[in-house]
Image 1 (cartoon, rainbow, N blue to C red):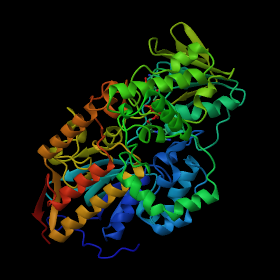
Image 2: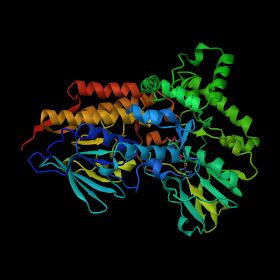
Image 3: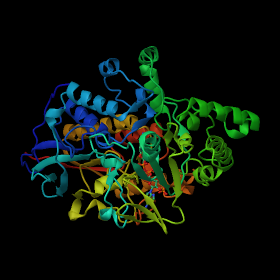
Length: 548
Ligand code: NAP
């Protein structure tokens, strides 16, 4: 836990540097990275825009915010003591508890002393003459480091469509990804929710309880799986603790980083009746068990997928009593064509008298007025408008900073054709820049990926230090091959058949259509990272002896 073997921090030509590494962000990834660097005696400073640790779990305080991963694997695995002492209260962790956990981690491992809060990194420019990064912040800091590590999250840059008339709306207006820290009172109010993704799905049932009227504006329906949340009894938690090592092993090997076993069968292996029984089992167990422990081919086989898609549509029609509303809630693209949200009595909410679903798929929201939301000729009165329109995934949070590599070229310029990062962590032309959750990182339970990536980056930095090298840089060919692999894998799934899919950049008007995540699984990704390192950092160029 203490810093040992601290390096003498100098640039290539002997100029003293402020830090070995700058970490941008102090959420799940940034905290873990900071700890890992400190363990290896690498001096680091983290800059965090928020006044507190937590990243997405600091900002997304909207009602109902929960993890969609089971609490005991939405955590760090590096400290046995931490695992022993922390108590989860529910099967899926509520946002305040995730935030409390991350605060606890920051305190327990004394990480705060290396974090500068309420500070946004505005630019990071690589000085090729000295192999040094020059980082500036909105508070006027100017610091130098050998490495920069972005830990800004894959789903953290909010996307807010430019609705005409937004400024004219006289009621309260909230963006879910920047929810106020104070409680918002919906009692007796007419509330409009724009969006029907994972965020809205969590928020809607809770708002419906107290609002006088709730209008949901849905452009594309989702396949919402029942989460089946509940209190985590002490006995169950103790049972989990007793086999924590096995649970983590299982999660590390599972395709999406969940502690689940493959089903070991495809749809064609069983009769239609047996398939139905298995899907009923998955629906009752809830959460992503439905995806990963029923049939192994439902994301890659059209026929299997259609059985599952129709199973869910039938469920929707059996829950939602008004047939027209049920129809609107039934997706017509394949299951997993968009990331399915987990719901907490989501479909049931549409049976309430005070809840109304408005389809904006063919007639979009035309504007906000001083008193509500207009769709075509129809105006929907609202006292509160909630905008739950998602994120500029993966690239958004990186491109919002002015990061410049060789020749003064920005990341945005490098990604003009397609976003690419070798192994999700390194961009050619940007020596000594590591992206945690850059394009091409697994789409999976994030904490499992964070454990792998943070250790790999720290190992790479130590390797350079031990070899007296000053730069590591992805080769363009290697990055291109990684991107090709992302394409091959995504095209073997039903994912491209979804609509406005953020996995492919399709939710943001004008954004390049390209896979932003590696869908090949957590273990193959880890194997690829480790193989590259073992093979002398294959696909990278390691360069230049340090002087002085
Ligand atoms: P999202 O899934 O991208 O949903 C955004 C919603 O806004 C969609 O329904 C979208 O419709 C709608 N929308 C966008 N522009 C619109 C417009 N101009 N008019 C009307 N509707 C519009 O975003 P999200 O719900 O924030 O979730 C994103 C991801 O964040 C999730 O998939 C998940 O990975 C993560 N997340 C996780 C949790 C959790 O684990 N508990 C919770 C929340 C979010 P279209 O579908 O038609 O584009």
